[in-house]
Amino acid sequence: MKEKGILNPQDAELEEAVLGACLVESEAISLVADKLRPEIFYNEQNRMIFAVIQAMFRAGKQIDILTVKNELASCGNLEKVGGPYTLVRLASRVASGAHLEYHACILREMYVRREVILGSYKLLAAASDESVDIADVLAGIHDLLDHLEGEMGTADHLRTMSQLMEDTLAQVEARVEGSRNGITGIPTGFTDLDKLTAGWQRGDLDVIAARPAAGKTAFALHLARAAATAGHSVVVFSLEMQGERLGDRWLVAATEDVDASHLRRGQLGTSELRQVREASCQLSQLPIRVEDSPVISMDHVRSVARMLKSKGGCDMVIVDYLQLCDMKSDQNNRNREQEVAQATRKAKLMAKELDVPVLLLSQLNRMSEGRPDCRPLLSDLRESGAIEQDADMVMLLYRPALHGLKTEHKSKYPSDGLGVVIVAKHRNGETGDVYFGHNPSLTKMGDYIPPDEWLMKHAK
Image (cartoon, rainbow, N blue to C red; front, side):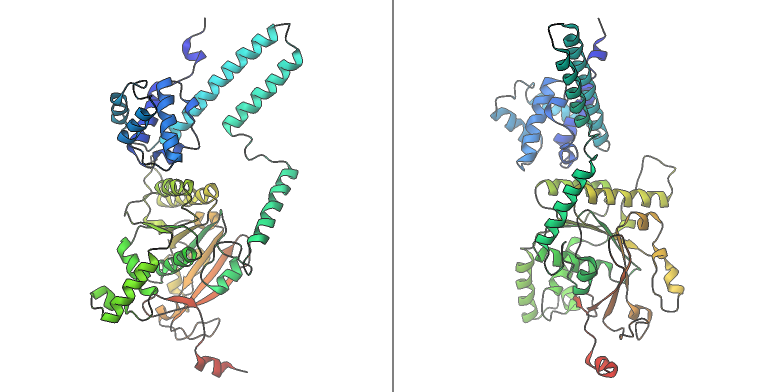
């Protein structure tokens, strides 16, 4: 007789660690929901507990020890799993959910091994039974292989040319049907940028880079508001600024003539206060979520975005900004460039996995300040060439007035209130410059319109 471990690959402690993490950490289930099913758990009690957690997650319910206990009780399974004590014991075993996805993959692999063993024994028995048609045995072998490949995901992304063309044509037809004046993605809020990009495209990693004080955050807030106004759910991860400071900027942007300095100092007049309150009511209706924890890793961003996406609340992700992300790694010998490379790679994988545009803000190094016009270049991306490599589009923000220039070198536009989006890399389209206008406090942005004096002077 074969040893039990060979017949039934399993790890009871690993199953309990995964369940405990799901009971204790709010984002845990979103990380493993697409990797685990109840039958993957070998222990029957664990299967019952995960089935309840999975059902609660799909229903959008809060998951913790008490809610799971009540759910188990309502379906008559609480005592079958060992009562409330079992849930408390599971929760107490969790030290960290840092490797939760890896643990889930191990459990899935053990399940597949059990399926291989069980299926093989059935096929051996069928092959030994001369009353069974050998064609049925061979068909059973093919069915088992198809089942196992499906479980391991090996065939998920392998398509014939026929299937690829069918899927591609479906996307083309969807773009044609969904196109609005040439915009097939999420609108940017700038007419010329929409023309160049056709909007933010699903699955793309778009990097917005600039020197400090060039207006990265202000620009990103305008993009978020434009997308949300068009009905798209936006998640903003602000590592640099407190959420309320972002709120201040959105309020000023949504009002007619509120002075940003008055809002900051609390010296609003009666008219300004009325406008702020009205703007607050309007902005409250926008589908924007903000997380302003100062310590956020790209794994955490992905976890939160996946959870919201599963509930229909994530059409675009904005991270402000890359260099402030927590990049702690188990590999202590990694240098900063390797850490940044890993973070950008995770951002790109998140965009593809969730099928949403991810806007990643980034710093530029000081090299541009040594040029006569201080105009940034793609090579100025700070700390890692992987940013350029992984990004589908790289936009460099440039404000000539910030460097004491009276005019912008290429367009000859006056620099006051002028911003330039330099689309330096565009994997699926054209590159070029897009001009936008802004007020002195950078709280209001829009399409650039040259002043009348400039137009008269340059009229032919």
